[in-house]
Length: 505
Image (cartoon, rainbow, N blue to C red; front, side, top):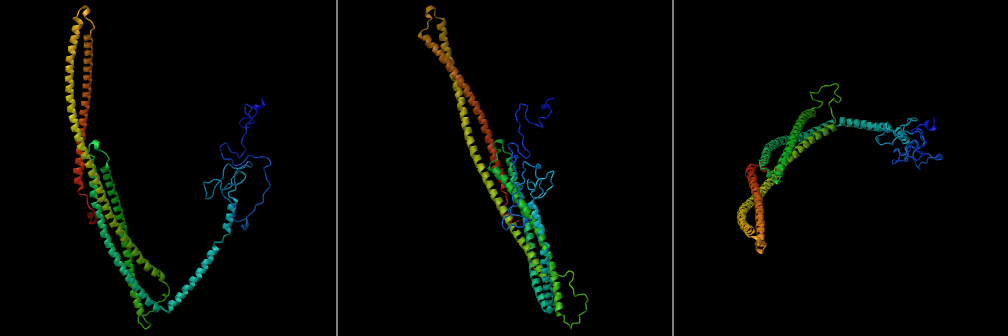
């Protein structure tokens, strides 16, 4: 067996069948048109190791260095070594290749040197120690402040009790004022809600009017079924009504939510007012007690804070926040009422402006249609007059043909007589014979010309009659459109509500 048959040309190709040398890429090489990661291996390309140089003032080698890189650019596949075909990425930069060392059958490396240094830095950074120091300092300070306050309270309990009564009285008045304000606001907002509901009911009328006008305009004849300015303004009017209704409904939902907030705030401030009344009564009674009072009893175990006791700071914060929350809710209600009335007024004005735009567009359409109708009627009159003129012309042409036929018969009679009545040499082609022949030819041509003109006149008359029908149909169509836009739509749109009706709803 021959040597060339002992090897596979696709596994061990040394040359092709024609004897041409085939060059194959080395491992790690790139195909034509692709990115070349490294040049093919060349003997003598391995260089001695180079010492790593760190910049001055660099941290220790086990901590992150300024020269560290995790981009993967240094992990290119060279011509030497069984490198893997791609890079494995498990870092937060998932999806970007080349951020970790490659994995092959000789290594299970997952992290780069830069990531190892970052992990060392994270491990060596103290965390719990700083928290412990901060907690220790803060706790000691809290303990010191607490015992100082307790000592002060034991020394001037009577004075603090009097001050407490003053503070309670002051806060009680503020709470009463806030309660009255939020009650009035709740009543006012409820009245404005009724106005908004009335505006929503009134809003049904312009929508019905706009849709009725659109429905009426669909009854126009086909030539006038156009999307003119009036049609666009009517469609826009319907859209504006829908947008105004959407705004009204959204505002109504906000009002409902705001009423619930007001009720909740009112309930909360009422509970706060009741608690302050009871506390003020008890503190005033305690202020009247003296060591000589007969109502003093020994109560074991009362020298401790109850489970529901709060601090003075929290009490002041709660009182201020309670009033502040009520004021915020009330202010939100005031702003919402302002937005509510603004929406009603602006919505009604927008609808009025759009109605004016629609009326102007309808008036312009009606005016243009009337002018067109007048022009069509004038054109129809001209057309009828022209039809009469063409019919008169046809009568004249028919009379001309009849007279030309008489001339034809005359010349033919003369020619017949001269052709068949003259004998022998007398039957010659004299000047008279040429004249008669020329006359016969001219009469025939004239008759044919008259016939052609009659056919043309008939065709024009037919076109004029057809045009007359089109004009009459178009005039009827325009009158129908004028009747719809000028009479029916105008009567319907006369009931369009005014902004005053919306505001007074």
